Each structure stands twice: as structure tokens, then as C-alpha cells.
Length: 555
Image (tube, rainbow, N blue to C red; front, side):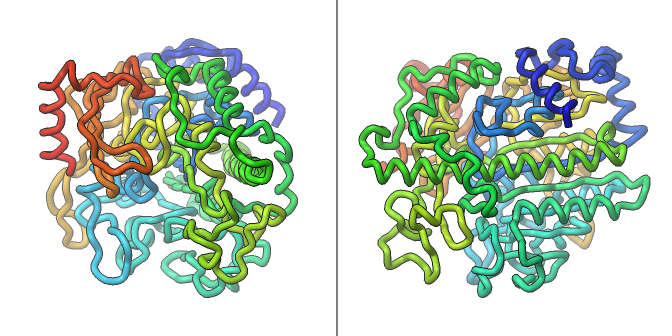
């Protein structure tokens, strides 16, 4: 583990900003591989198919990783980040399910969403799209999942139906990290079987158990079989809950409040070189009440909730470290591509933290029986709180707003890619990328192609994908991922839409708490990632053209 710490320290000294950045001294073999001709990377991905470990964090802010500016201890992710490439222009969707629709389909969330009749709320991932695990199974891969699914808690649409050989899944959008309290609504399934708390260990804690299951699945893989492992933690999503011995790990760390943390995070993110050009806190307008306006009791509740959040994030990093350590000890790390990302911007949920109210955010009468959101009980098995808008904004600034918004604060996700055999170390990629690009990227890594629109297995007819492979760019063989004519669009269930094409973005979603949609706004993200300067009046023809594209292709 000392080697890991040394790598993180060297990475902090590197500070390179080009995706194909130079030698940071992290890994001489990785540097040598990066200097070989482009054909060597192709050979590495076709003659010896690499494993793929794809990790997703839930409700994570852009600067919640140490290598992105955080004070939270994340040695595992820092090691991977500095020995690989960090991405600062990856766009997810604004919510958990829609991001996963984009991810698994390689297409827009609206297109991939299939309304499901009956009592099930929301949609499911339509069968007219082949998923990542299905396509990788076609290429001879074993496929595993342990974590949050959120793409349909219904027959025919859970993980076992969508290409995973083995799966342990939280099938809902959120759920308890502990087991025994929720005996009547335990939302976990394994390999197609609904579970009860009696089916899991007494000390069940979701983050730990997801990790245990993934290690179990990996260890069962037949020798010589490549694998795809999807590890979508529900941490640090609410409810913020931790094992007892982790509750006070960050005690007192956030007493200065979220306004001070926002400034500290921005300064640190600038220092580690992760922020895109044009990033600034000048003109940043937080939605949260100024910290100084809060009562002492309110300050303590928010700071305590953030302490629990930070502990959950460190616990997740430690758990990822267990998987990486196994890969290292088993000799598989060098042949494994590791991708880590958030599923959208930070959460600003006020669930239970503001006045001790229940998950519904209403009055005391909405607290379910047994829930105790007293300050003394924060983070324990029967509490159900989030960390609030202010601390969410501290982790998202300099980007505007949070999860649920189509602004950059809602869409832009921190990410990293690690594979020293092909990915040059120490770089930061500012190339535009979306969650739709992961599917073709993984196919490219494996050395196969999407079959295109037409007949597929089980009598299905599938659609083609929209995303493009980022692998040539990430391995230093291409400067870009998308041509400037490519576009990506989003629609919000709360009203409004957004579209990005080249450097430009249009958006008509109203600010949080306001009615919408609003008149269209236009931003040049290459110089204004914080969306401060509306250019719509200067370029009305461009706005009209992009609006037409959004309405035609992405609604």
C-alpha cells in the first residue's frame, strides 16, 4: 500500500493538462507503452482482451475526489486518477435513471426509455436497445453486476434479463444501507431472486456487501475468460448511513460551513489542475442560504450530515481499494481497464437535515415509524437524511446548480480512466464526452462492434447507437471524440431542455424553485463553463438552429 501513497504524491506534483501528457514518473512501463506507435494499443485490445471494471458513484459532486479537489481521503481513486487520465468534460444526465438509460443504451434517455404500464413508476430500458453486458457477452465476456440498478424493478427488465451472468442489485433508485429496519420493503435481488433481510449477513452494509459480491463473482471466473464488472455503488446517495465505527471519522471537519468549503474546494481543484478553462467563482450565485444566516442548531445539523457524507465517500474508496488490491494480487490489474464516474452532479437534498423532517420533506407527520432524524442519530441505521443544498453546491462549484438541473452542475460528472498499458498517465482530458459514449468505448476496448439496427437475439429488433468511442482519444491516437457537428440533448421531466453542440449549449430550464421553461439561453462552454454569460441575443440564428435540433432529435 505504500506504493499507492507514493503514486498519489507524485501525481499531485505532475499537474499535466493534456490528455496525452508526458511522463510523471508514475509508471515507466505505462510511459513506454504510450510512446509506442498507435498500432500497439490496437494490438493490446484485440490480441489479449482486457477486463473492464466500471465503477459508478451515486450523487457525487465534481470535487468530491481528492484528485479533483477534495479534502476527503480517497487514496484509491487518487492513485487511479493520477496514473490514468481525469475527465472534466463528461456529461451524464441530471438524474440517476436517465443517466443509466444513456449509459446502457448508447442513446438518448428519451429514446431508450420505455413507459411501463401498471403500478411501476417511471420507465424501463427498452428491449429495442442491446445493453453493454449483452454485447460483451456476445464477445465472449463474463458479465457481473453488484450495486444499484434503477432501470426497472419488473419482470423482464431486471439485471438478469439484460445480460448479466451474476447480479446482486438494489433495484430501486434509493434504499437502506442496512438491512434489518426495512423488513417489509427490502429492495435487493440476486440472480433473479427477491431477497429478504434474512438472506444477507446480520452486519449487512450495502457498500461492503456490493464489494463482497463483486469479489465473489470475479473469483469464480473461469481462467482465461475476460470479464466486465459493473460496480454501481449507491453511496454516497441518501439516506446517509455508516457503520458505527465510521460515524465520527470527519467529526468537526465541516464546522466552518459550506461557503468556506466551496472556496477551499475551488482553490484545491485549481491547484490539481482539474477545472476547465474559464472556471471562476466570480459571479457564482449559490441557491443555499448563506451559512452565516443559519442558526447554530441548523449549522450543526448540516455540518454533521456532511461529516457522514464524507465518511461514506471514504468508505466507498476503501471498498474500491479492496477490488483493486485483489486484481493486483491475482495478476489481473495490468490487463484491466478501470473506469470510475459519477452518475450526475451532486445532490442538494434536504431530506431530514433541515428540520428533522422525514424522507418526503414534509411535516413531522411524514416521518415513517421508527425513523429518528435527531442530530444524535444522524448516520445510524434508522436515520434518513441528506447533506443539503449548500454542501452540494460546495462540491459542484464553479458549475451552476445541482442534480436535477440541466445546467453544468447537474450534468457534468467527474470521471477517470486507468489502463497503463494503453492510457498515458497524468493527463486531464477536456474533450466533450457523454454517457452515451461508454457503450461504444467498451466495445472498442474489447475489439468488437455494435451490430447496428436490425434483428438481435431472442427475436428482438434493436436500434443503433448514438455515442462514439472515446478509446482512440483516451489512448492518445486521436485529438477528439466528437466532430463539432455532433450534438447531445436532454429533456427534463420538470420542464425545459438543453442541447450541447461543439462549444455551445442552449438551455431553457428555469432555475431551482422557479416556474419554467424560460427563454432560451446560449453559453459558450469553452470559455464559460459556469454558464454566466448568456449569448442568445448575439446569436439568435444559432439558437433557433439548435432548438430545432433538440426538438427533432432529443425530445
